[in-house]
Amino acid sequence: MKLSKEVKNGITRREFVKNTAIKGTAAFAIGAGGMTIPVSAQSPKSTQISGKTIREAARETKVCRTADVVVVGGGPGGIGAAVAAARSGADTVLIERYEHLGGMGTGGLVTIIPAMTDISGKQVIAGITQEWIKRLDARGAADYPKKEHWGSTDKKLVDYYKNRSPFYATGNRVGYSAHIDAEISKCLFQDMMKEANVKTYLHSWGTEPIMEGNKAKGVIFESKSGRQAVLAKVVIDSTGDGDLFPYTGAAFETQIDKTLRMSNLSFSYWIDNVDLKKYEDYKKSNANELTEKMREVRKLGGTPGFLTSNLKNQQNVVWCFPRYANKSQYDVEELTRVEFLGRKEMLITHDFYMKHIPGFEKSFIVLSNSQLGTRGGRRVVGDYVVSEKDMKTKDPFKDTIAVFPNMDEKNPLMYMPYRCLIPRNINNMLVACRAFSSDAVINDSFNLIHHCVCLGQAAGTAAAQSISSGVDLRKIDIRALQASLKKQGVILPG
Ligand SMILES: Cc1cc2nc3c(=O)[nH]c(=O)nc-3n(C[C@H](O)[C@H](O)[C@H](O)COP(=O)(O)OP(=O)(O)OC[C@H]3O[C@@H](n4cnc5c(N)ncnc54)[C@H](O)[C@@H]3O)c2cc1C
Image (tube, rainbow, N blue to C red; front, side):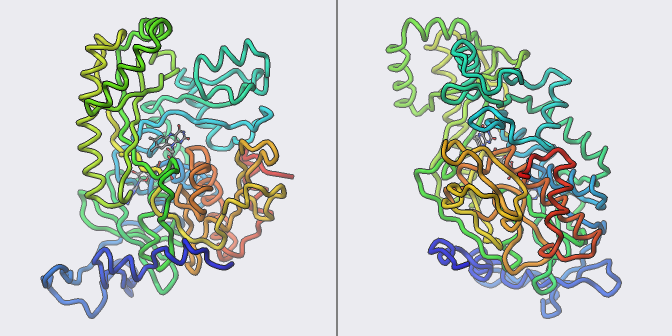
């Protein structure tokens, strides 16, 4: 496939290494004994400091584990990948930088899984996402329209559900979207890892893939225990932002049109003890005054707007998620700037609400995100780049591994090919998260929580299949992969 202008303008490993001043650090080799990883033999014995860069000293890194599959990032993509790989028989390691699993779906306080039905109300997304919701449901920790109502156009029902959540009905039809509990999800995800026998390292930053030529051989990670390595037959980058593949030599894209949703960072927080009935009554009879007040809070430097939680035990909670334009979604200075700004504006907003918005008098800020909301970031250039034109394709790809609802009436289904998970020219690696190979328009619409779980589930299953059959990731039997996914409850064509 010809590279698009964006791809040509995308960043290659060489540029990335140059830009981030890590020259030379990607030259890892696996030691003869297999258990230590000497850095390039040319590296000096002690750190050399010269001007704006330093040359790090050579060092030996402990291999703490060997595995079939190592997944880096325990968000929606990583959960799907790790669980599926382990359940398919692969000895699997999961590395997560924070103290919990779930990524944006828990630490990012993003607790809505929208549109799992197509425009006719037929369920399209199931698999591990469905299992997650079912497990939450058993604890009263999920809320969604009753199954028998999915697809209904009964006006009474549509109005009822629209009133409960803007996600419960699209147009004039009830659909399947779920509000979920972030804290209970964290607990369920760790249960799922334990049950599947996934060796999990929390508090661990995956910093670099271990490469032999263009073959991924494992991952270096850093934690309170120091710098360690996991060697594996397949490496899955599920970091969301695509932290690993830039070091492999894979090309990637970063360009995002500023009008797209995913060009923004978000700082999310919850306000609790809101008297929502009082607020709704006020809103009904004083709509203009409320609009004026919201203008005022913006003038003061606050950020108006919120959604309600629909969970029975969270009836007094509202979710605020102001968006912030930014220069880069993976520049630490930008991330810090937005964290600081988000917290500052959170206080201004809440102070104003307490004083001026009926229902908020006794409210308090109960939680702010532990993971800043990045929606975009890097997108790998894979064996296939899913692009806007694919939204208008009626036929599934031969290697379709996931199907997503598309709100276009003429083309209600979006098919995802396995090839969009494989970084071009790189072996033994898959990318299973919002950094999958896609143009910005596709990524903007199809990088949601359940989408990433689906991509992860396919990647984990493919990795296990590649290892058990001894066949390269690019050459696995696609029909067998699809059959295995269907067995796991994934809805696929045919
Ligand atoms: C404010 C906001 C609102 C949104 N609203 C919705 C919504 O309503 N519904 C919806 O479905 N989607 C929504 N999205 C999008 C959705 O949350 C994300 O696209 C989705 O979570 C992506 O999943 P992921 O696994 O690719 O990445 P993430 O959810 O970002 O997970 C990545 C995981 O990897 C870990 N990680 C990252 N780097 C490293 C590293 N170097 N080493 C180890 N671990 C690492 C992270 O800590 C995290 O656990 C929203 C996003 C934002 C920001």
